[in-house]
Length: 347
Ligand code: NAD
Ligand code: TYD
Figure 1 (cartoon, rainbow, N blue to C red):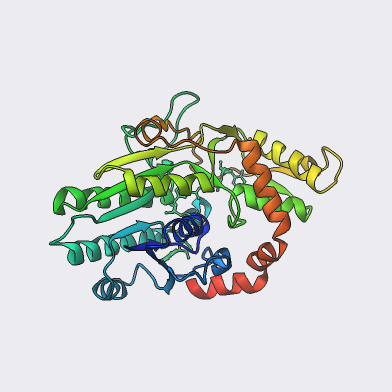
Figure 2 (figure 1 turned 45 degrees about the vertical axis):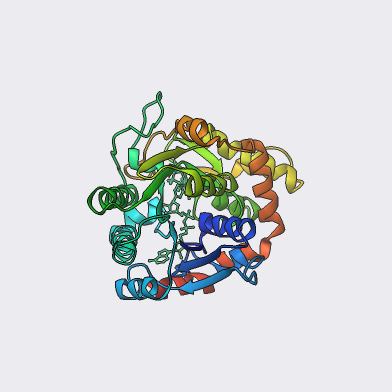
């Protein structure tokens, strides 16, 4: 079986690729990634010599490249994670999100439609999406698979659009697909622009911790390896044409999470308790900031038996230990050279 994983050099994609390469020696896992600022082959050095792993550098926005790839390789399944993924960047440059998240997804859909068209049997297109498509909750309630889409940021609007395109290819062309909408992930290899890895890095460097607004925004956090496990399960056992919500049953207000992280870091760094909390700085709020995300993950739990395997405290400790033991990785992704590479990609 040949599986194409897009975005496999990114945060979640690297965990998915690692899991598939290790668990399915009979599959060939193709990792297609453009290596934007968020893509990093250092995320995969432990598996990149496995015989069932192949890396392809390519851009999903390049329809000719994608089409040729599907003509030359017979893929049985696609697990699509490649995306622009950071809300703050989407506020700065919405078109980058339209290009990759919408046009790139439609390019992939066209390639699978045209190349699989007479033989959908045993094929599957899996779109990895976010709970942010549902918009914001008030202080009560949970997102279910039936919640209406109501995206508020350019990022979530682009993911909502790509979800709709995937579903429309199912309805219109009979494409076998699954979509999952997952809550906020955290764990090793997370690029330090998102809340948890940014704050770990800033605490190490004794830099300010910029909490947006009053810090009372709420997110549901899931350890990334539990997400990869859910993706593996849905890819193999999910039903075509279905959506599954994936979440950690683990809601935290940002400020409480940041205080917990400060306390764990103080312990690990042998600093006095309360020292890192001094770095908390309340800053201007993110425009259009969604108040609360929370997932009802009972469908995937009941139908496929999935549930998170670690508590937040356990997952956070694993994550902090990983960043402290991988200072070279952190140094490389935060270095000036790396930023220069990013600016060249997008100039
Ligand atoms: P990431 O930003 O860490 O990685 C994205 C990867 O996609 C990078 O390796 C990048 O090089 C690659 N990429 C970007 N543009 C590309 C293009 N045009 N062609 C080919 N490759 C390209 O993202 P992530 O946090 O790992 O998220 C992966 C997926 O999961 C995304 O689709 C995201 O919307 C979704 N998701 C993320 C979260 C989260 O908390 N991070 C939660 C739910 C869903
Ligand atoms: P983030 O990690 O960017 O994920 P998302 O916006 O997709 O949920 O942000 C998580 C929460 O943390 C969100 O409410 C915004 C907030 N936040 C800060 O307060 N300060 C920061 O520097 C960042 C990056 C995020």
